[in-house]
Image 1: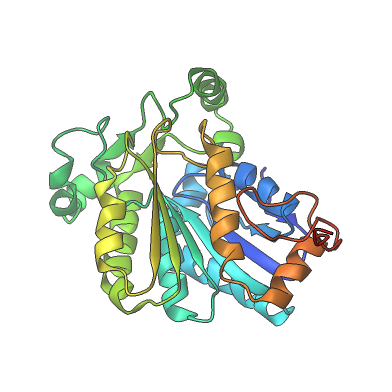
Image 2: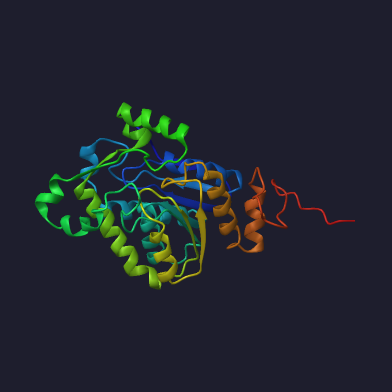
Length: 297
């Protein structure tokens, strides 16, 4: 069974939130790179996840939101300055978290899911919000994920398919999403849309132009309606799972740069003192390990 992932670094922390039916592993490629740049990284398991379908069905969005709020509060109590990032439905949770805790230093919103309207989703998906209000449909409907599984890289997709076929939900999550759970995703999206105009935490939006699950218009909506400062990055060689697809390094580097620029000088020095690698594209950064960059003679 997959457990939470924690990489200890500086007192600058990033709380990463995986998506519905996902696992912490889908966030850990980004998490490990952030750790190399000096960040402490926490990736909790959302309640009901990384187990069987019965456990998932016994959880709901309130359980997930309480769990990430509790992890944020734990990090804050221990003296960390905290950023947050989320994938898909995890991005909606990130916005809600930042609304309730405006002292969060910044957000990274990866492929946010406000509507399931990507190119690989049925063209009738626009009817889902209405149909999921009908108990008989909601209780019987299951969304069966199919290739390309949110991944553009063919070799990586093949490895993911093997894990999915093994039935090990702790490794690759579930591909069969009950209607009840989809309703929870849409409720999260509705709450995120409601609070985003009054949420001021700076936010980085990253979305693939060819997202197969959630069209890039989802992130464009956030860009237009979000109450705080935003930056937008469009990916050209990824599908939905941008944290594990072939531009994952670009995603991690952009996240690190965005978070770095929200820090003051003292916090930047503390971050770099714990780093093993400089953040690409950041000018004037000290050398990793706390060594000051030498001035030219």
